[in-house]
Image (cartoon, rainbow, N blue to C red; front, side):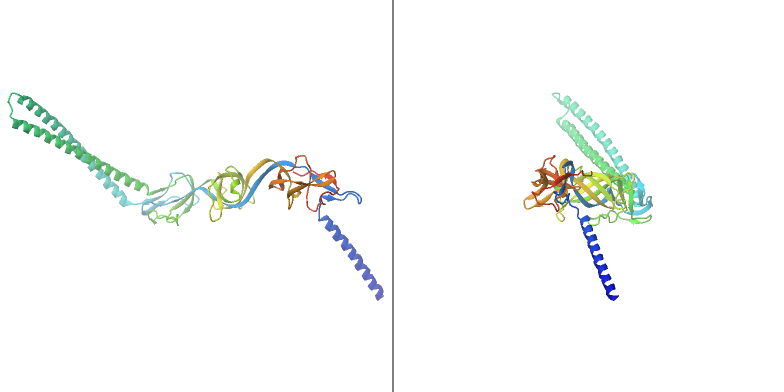
Length: 411
């Protein structure tokens, strides 16, 4: 009995091993597709071939990007004082010229009153100088008339002495000198009026700065102050540009998408190139745009060029600061002759495809261009009507007799 059981076990093990080997062999054949299929044991192998197709190909760049506001500004106080009113908060929509906050500067109002009083005084002085000028003009006219009359009486008749004539002429010269002084006084008074008026306008301008207004239509992105805070005149620096700012206002009806294009791709980049933007948080939903502008310079540290894409955002779904993925389509070629990328092989002599000539595998040398969406552009070496073997992987050597089978590619 023991012998019989042992023999039975051995038989079962052998059968199980044979079945497993058959399963492994079947799985291996199913997992190793090849363009070469056997027909019959005594017939030539079958090879799948496809025809070249003309499609649009492009050089595509996948890169990271950041969404930013189309315009952003930090608003500062240009005068020092206490905030008497803060009228907006973060998220509020504002219009250009809208007052966001008011700074109370009572001493400046007093300065304005004093400057206006000084202006009125200067204007009065100017009016007095003008009247004096008119008086001296009349006196000059009178003295000229008297001198002329005395000269006529004294000519050849001797009615008036030379001394009297000299006195009359001297009086006319004095009147003219006084007129010159009056003109100078008038001009001085006019200049003083201009200075006083400029002082008034300067204080009015400074008082206008007590109202913090929105520079454009947008959204309040940041508020740094509260009512009653003491604010100082602008203290921004190049290292901390927003230090001391009261508000940050952003224009987000259009969003700028900033990405960096590597040095090797820069020569192929053009304004108007199509772009697909996929911001985080939209489950891969694409936003279609175009390259709007780029900086025309490469960052010497990264060798990348800053590139921008403008996206309309009238519904305000996109927010500044959002991370995004960008696909740029550059060097677009709308009617390129292409073959499947798997059909292109490479060896020491260069790129090639296999074709079937007189039922034999034949090597064709080609020059390739772009590869896009699984297809490779063929620039030279191949006719549009020449079918090519669908894949060079695992193919029989050139010269092998085969049976070509045309297959239709899925679009």
